[in-house]
Image 1 (tube, helix red, strand yellow):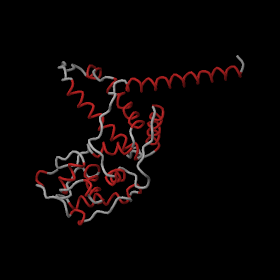
Image 2 (tube, helix red, strand yellow):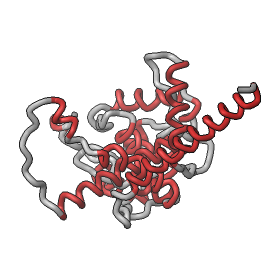
Image 3 (cartoon, rainbow, N blue to C red):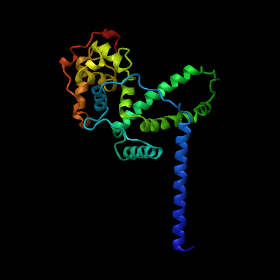
Image 4 (cartoon, rainbow, N blue to C red):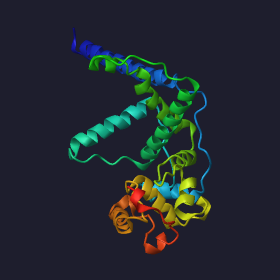
Length: 261
């Protein structure tokens, strides 16, 4: 075999391997996408632009407009490989920062996935199954659907949904404490008003409750809440957050702190 023939053989093998990898990845997406409903669950309502901005800033982007990249199975895999490479090259105790758009996309995927599970549970009551007798049997009961469907869901959302709809889905499903699910309910529970009437600091307080403070109520723990919030101003991606002071809490409705975490 001549040297040129050898390199041609190597090149052909690499092309074949690349083609097989592409087919495998595309098959992964198709398998997951086939399990998804034709119509995805939608947000309960649309939220005003300031509420979306508050969410966008809190998850890590205070400089650019709300936007989310469109993914396919290849860019999705590339992002994961890049994340693993960054983690391997960095500190083993500190995860690399996830871009704000991918964070918003993941939050949206979690919310939509939960809504899909609820709909399926309501449509078909669970069939009793015998408990697995070993760890091996338990692992066998984990279907490919559970692993591939979330991947296909994120890709589909990124391609079909505008970022504003993603923000609305997240705003409407976050846990804001005080038994409030969704920003609309949280606005009335904490401040006794509609979302549209909240100030920028008040919106940021509710975002911080849901995403940054571990649901610690600002009425019951005002000093700890403000201290925790102010810590984020030291980070470049959160310097656009509005300042919060005691005055920002003036409209907070009282609550029984003994029942709060």
